[in-house]
Length: 309
View 1 (cartoon, rainbow, N blue to C red):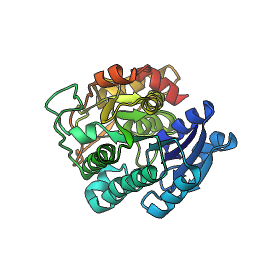
View 2 (tube, rainbow, N blue to C red):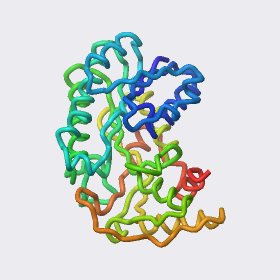
View 3 (cartoon, rainbow, N blue to C red):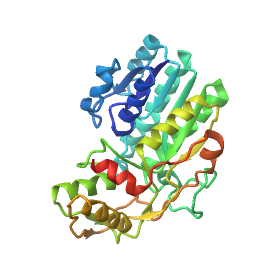
View 4 (tube, rainbow, N blue to C red):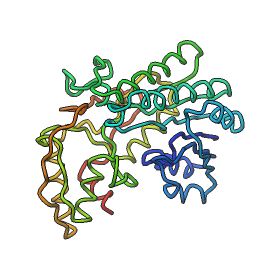
């Protein structure tokens, strides 16, 4: 099967590309390499995947590739994901996350794509939710432009389904972690703390550490994408571990896992909380179980072991 993966050189995207190549699909990756890395695709490129270096904000470039490839499936992962940058420059965030999504949808519609699987966010959309675990029909109250732009993109995916009959689905991830997540720069706290453990640096916690997240390992996210692509389900679906874990609990779990490898995590440094960050997050994953047949298979400790390896 011919597939296009936007943002396919990134952390999640490259893991997905590997899975598609492994099952025998022909894969074209679209990535501007601003945060994605060519080396993430070393194995996939050697196995025949094709990398096109372009920005999804370039409508003509996206259209040209889809006109050439005529894929059956498109997985849209390309995005601006830095919450802090979205607060500082919401227009930049919207150009990447909203206009980029429209460009992908328009090209998919024009060139006969059977199904488009969109990457979205859970905690970033629901904000400080009234209900935990939070279901898909909870009110959308993002705390940062990032969540607002991802919600707008979801709306366009559903619009293209209603207006044009294009088959789409949006997967709302919890906090994804796992191999290839960069331990430096803009990365999830799990990867950052693992980097601190391996390099002997002091981990920094913004706020008091009581804030909670719903972590999900990247291989489970890849499995959800494959199931979503093969289904006819539309609309949003939460993909998460279904558990609420505080940042302080994460530190303790990492300390235990590190101790088994002779590694010690330093006591954290506490810094002021950052604007736009959610206090508590736990997603309801019943729809994924019922309509995709998906559920997480890797718990946090098992995922930390895999990431450290």
